[in-house]
Length: 336
Image 1: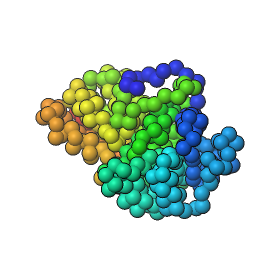
Image 2: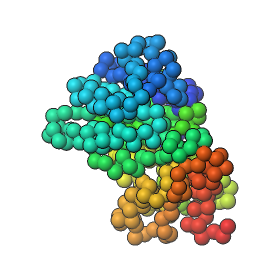
Image 3: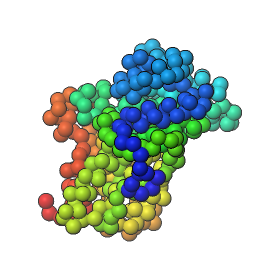
Image 4: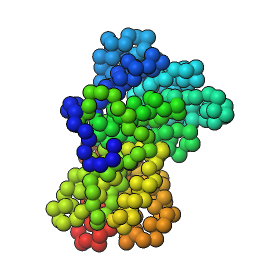
């Protein structure tokens, strides 16, 4: 839904909104089921599927062995026979052990069968740092899969979007990677009780502004809004654009915002080098509005190193609202 505000609804957490979306789809479509490590009685590593096995039973809320390759392979087969599996991959880092299934099988099967085989898999996975989970459980790897043709990539920033985008992902006939940044699970926001779908590929302006555009997704949307609020106290009107999905990318919204303000800051939690921000920057630079920018595009992201276990070092490595504020001031040539 474009705009700053979500429709009114109950105040629930990001995690509860995802659970709500899954419940709606399991009730509506008998072909939908959830599988993953500890998603049953335990309720998932982050409690997202808590209580679902009591409602839907072990035939539709399926605990898998500790083998991500087996889970994704099973989901691909099920999807090709008409099912709509939701797979919970405990941490996005674990994509590394099932990359063949994701990028060589799920992503390509529909293309290689001439459209004869559909692979409607929703792969939910916890992403990002800030929890002291160290280098093998804290990465932001969305740019890796956004690069692969055939895969859709969603990174919701709010509880409202988490539910609406998840419903769209489950309804989609293509594999969707659904990144849930861990620090967002306990955040709250208004979420209607009824089912609703947010189209994949539709960005949202979270705050209007005229001086600079902050383009972000996931947890960095929260940081961008906090930065914009602080900048407003200095008389700087920063616009915040939430991408919501990386593939499809709402190129039109990106270019409209860039043309409107003439200054662009791109923020994501992932490592800056090789991150998705580079694709956004290139999209703007190659467009007509690239010639009218009033300052170079700036990127805000994590430093180029594995995520440290130390709380202090992790905080130093990951970007925050202060980094965004600094980038905006540099773009506006304000001395710091």
